[in-house]
Every structure is written in C-alpha cells, then in structure tokens.
Image (cartoon, rainbow, N blue to C red; front, side, top):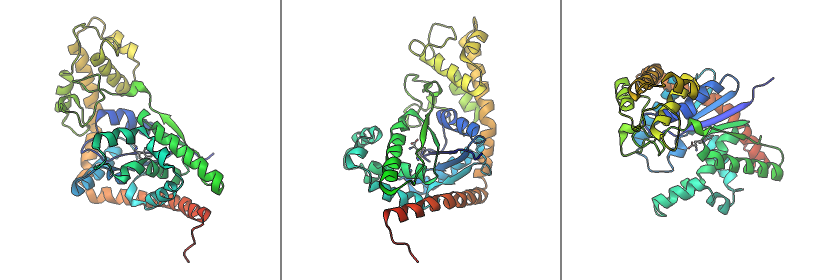
Length: 334
Ligand code: TRP
C-alpha cells in the first residue's frame, strides 16, 4: 500500500530554533517520516510577510534547513526543501486567492492579531494572504495529514474549505487534508516566565533554550530556571508552572511518563531534578547541534541537498499545478 502523504513547514525566522520547535515539531516529524511520505519545507516566502534583512533571511533559511537535518529529518527519506525553490507555490496561491473570500481571509485570528499589533500601515497584503499561500503549500502535494501547532489549526481548516470549494466548482482536483494538532502537553514555556510560551522574541533570553547554543549555556539556563518554594517535583500547571515546564521537557526528551519522573525525584531537591533536566537536554541537543554546524560549515553540500529535494518536490507540485491551470480554463502554452 502506498504511504499517506504528510506535509509541514516552518519559517526561517531565527538563527537557531529553540526547544519548543524541537519538541513540538522536529521530534514529531522525525518520528513520522517512516510511516508517511513526508514533505517538509522551510517557508521563506512566508517569512517575507514581515520585513526581513535579505542577507539574514538567506542565512536563516540555510540554518533552519541544517537544523532540520541535524534533528534527524533525513533528506534522502523525506523531501526537505526550500519553499521558494518550487515556483508552483506562489502560482497556486494566486489561483486559490481568487476563490478565497475577502471576509473569509479577514476572519483568520493570526492575521487579526498580527495586523492589530503592526498597525494598518505596516500590515502587508502578503500577511493577509499568508494562509492562502499555506493552503497552496499543502494542496500542491495531495497531502493527507498536516501536523501543526494549535495556532495553525484555523489555517488548515481554511485549506480544507478551499480544497472542497475548488473540487466542487471545477471537479475533483485536490485531496482534502486533515490537521494533526500537537498536544498541549508538548507546549514549552519560558524558563524565567513559565506562564508565557517560550519565544525567541522574549526580552529575557535566559528563559529560552536554543538548539545551536553551547551546551554549557543551556545547562546554566536550566539550573537557573524559575521554580517555587514548595520543594516537591510535581506536575501542577496552575500552582507550579516552572517545575511543570521542566517536567514536560524531561518527559518529552526521555520519552518517560511524568508520574515516573515525579516518583524518581520524590523527597529530593530541585537541584538534583534540574541537573537531570540539564543533562537530558544537553545530551539530546549535542548531536543535533554538531550535525547542523557541520552542514552550515559546508553550504555548497547543503545547497546541493536542497536542490535535489526541490526537484523532487517540484515534480509533484507541477503536476498538481498543471491540472489546476487546466481546470480553471487557462490556455495551455504550446
Ligand atoms: N504557518 C506555519 C507556521 O507558522 C508554517 C507553514 C507554512 C506550514 N506552510 C505550511 C505548516 C504548510 C504546515 C503546512 O507554523
């Protein structure tokens, strides 16, 4: 039987991914790539929806790809590529934009949040049509499943609606994808401010663990993580957000259940517990970091891998796009 198809993507928005991306996305993707025909993209066109420094964007795109591979996304098994290398993405996005309602796009909560933060003058039309480009990413590959965070669920819903609308207007063309939403227990919070989501844009960088940081830097951040005065290693998001966050991290990385970890540390102090978390994180990150640094030191080889995979992706995407162009009535070029 043919494997079902999986698609996901991540923006090249930082020099280094952080542990939230690692646990929430990369670890999952790594685990899924055997059971699915998996496509993963670095969505650089999406990154352009907010201002970027050109040289930095290029660098971040390579770095993000290197970290995917470092984390175990194998470029010979999965199709790992850069979105802008496959021109069918913006081409299909244009077609889809013509069947997307203005009001429908305006109801996307991420757009409403971002545009109210930036203000009307710095909000681009690209930011408005961001979810349409995301729908194109997914639909070009006849995707079955889309693993994403809760914040992207509405965009996958829109993708489904557009696929169904197109199919009913122009005939069966797209497979209708399903979102697989990452569990809330996989959510990672800031080490210094454990009630807000860990984010690279945090003012206090001592609460954020980066994949590419020196191991000693990450160990230190974990040893200094905010906890509480209660002294027991117990999961309680409301009363003990700091300890709970560390429990989630340790559990995700070791694959052990939280109650087993609580038992292990019963009657022991936070120092021991933090040491165990630091050790687990450092050991997990080390090979990922080394592999990513190795690839970043050889950009020609990295670019070659990305080019091979862009060709693989384009072969699938172009077939879908040609069919779409036919369906909507564009004249074939001879
Ligand atoms: N919008 C997604 C995010 O910010 C990234 C993304 C772009 C994506 N295209 C995609 C995710 C297609 C899944 C499938 O996380």
